[in-house]
Image (cartoon, rainbow, N blue to C red; front, side, top):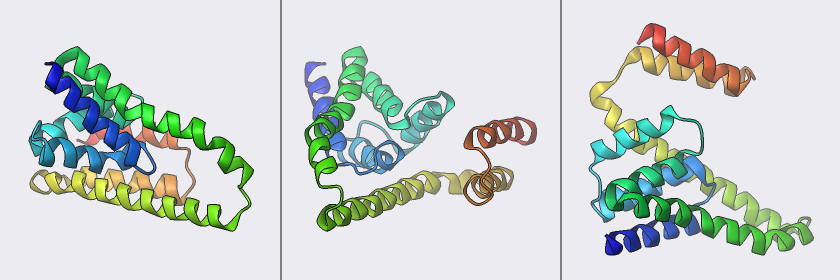
Length: 176
């Protein structure tokens, strides 16, 4: 169990250190590390754990790291996964906050931050693609339509995300 906990620490520490955008943008990195590189989960198990993590409020990547850590190494793995995923970002935020605020008007920093936004968007798109692939065999046109309606309502029609999620959840219960 100690070896598994150590591997959880290393894997989620690396994800926490190199992911841009955090949260859902980390999903592709978590999937690649835990399914493809380490073999801790199958694609179906990853999708199931991800689905379970969506049921509860909070940060998806944090909940997923806890669930994977728990599955691989028990409670120590759960704690290691959550700590390792979050600690690099916190340390870098504390270390670099002064630099970013000091040079916030510098052209080079604006270029770096813009590039990181695009990088985070690319990781989020890759995570979305990885999440959508397993749905191909169980595609529900009703669920897809509800998801598109939620996206349009929140992104284009400026509906409150909170209200949109409530309406979406209610529609899923009624229509699925």
